[in-house]
Image (cartoon, rainbow, N blue to C red):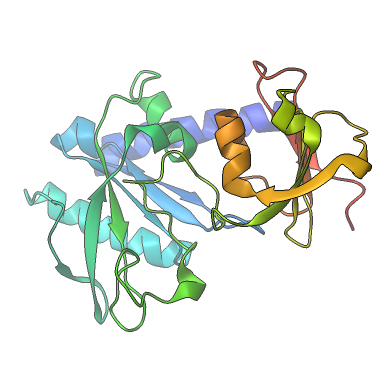
Length: 251
């Protein structure tokens, strides 16, 4: 499995280099899973045209790829895409806008971009944001609440990266709030989150708290914002990186 992953990784990196050389940019397509939305982002626009890279979330990947290819063509022709402006003709029947991506999100979503730019994230990026069917944007009043987590807004909320409401009720034990590190996290198939200090917590100490409270107690919990339904994550100490896998106990 590791060999196959390494081979796929090398092939992906070679495709990036080849496409940038041939077309001026490469598009990375990430399909949705059972928790995270799909997204597409460019690599090469900054190197070839001194223009920010572009990322878009939440539509079908072929639609987003077509939109980003259109953006890339405009940039090749010398157009500069900016924030704070409505753009037409990108998405049929709807205006779109661009936001400046906060550097805090680069490692979360632009991984191959970091690799291409010499293992750094020293490049600018913009997020293409689309409205709901009533032409309301996500930061405006009356935006369709069912679409709230289809496209995270990467210019804000760096303190809370989850695709959930901050006041979502989650399960933890008393020890979490007494200073013991969170070492085991479960994202159940029904959407419930559990945060524990040991593999076998004392459930008589269980508490229902807001997800935001957990993130405030330990901001490194943000690192597993992407944990899918039915998966668990663990680490040996607060300083270690998270490991995660599908939970065999979840059906």
